[in-house]
Image 1 (cartoon, helix red, strand yellow):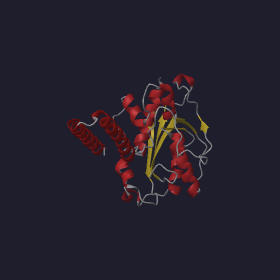
Image 2: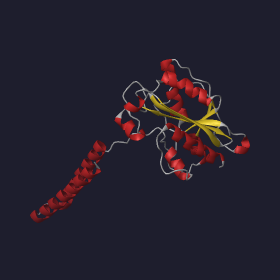
Image 3: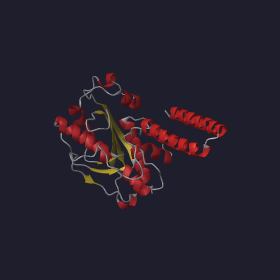
Image 4: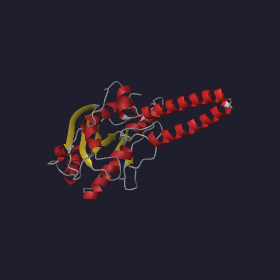
Length: 260
């Protein structure tokens, strides 16, 4: 689309030049005509930019430096105890034993269904177990989600539905503190809505959000997506956008943040 705008700009510039030469030859006021043409060009350029340049959709792990309101954050989110995030340090008694969690969903809106649950159990800063479960959302998975995650309708066709998957996920997490990236505004509200939809219940949990911690401890970064943090800490170059893998990377990020 940018090519179309550049082409239009080039055509307008060419028309302006030719018109100015014509007016000069015929003795008209070329300066006034040029000014009017410039105003017309500026208006048309503004029109095309607002018509065609639309913001790209955000991924659940994407965030700017300043926290923003989110459509995923809602009043029906569970009551949870929020762990302190102003500073983390292993000498301050911050969690060394926890579970890092992540989910993949059919979208980012309030009607999103979970298609994968993932978690890694951490003991003394090291991964000791992992959990991964595809979930049948009972609705079609959008092509864009399949493109990002690689999860297809066929993959989840014979997988458990969320009413059966959530209790197993809770059992793996136990009473551990949850660690997640953008967990406050996305993962926990989505899990709570899914639990309410099927009557599975929602446990009382404490959590740390690595997005919020990184915004506090690393204000020099322009962006605080999980992708930005794993690159900043040299953990990996890309995300796989699969729940257990992203949970493992989130745990690695949390361990690095604890050292700041």
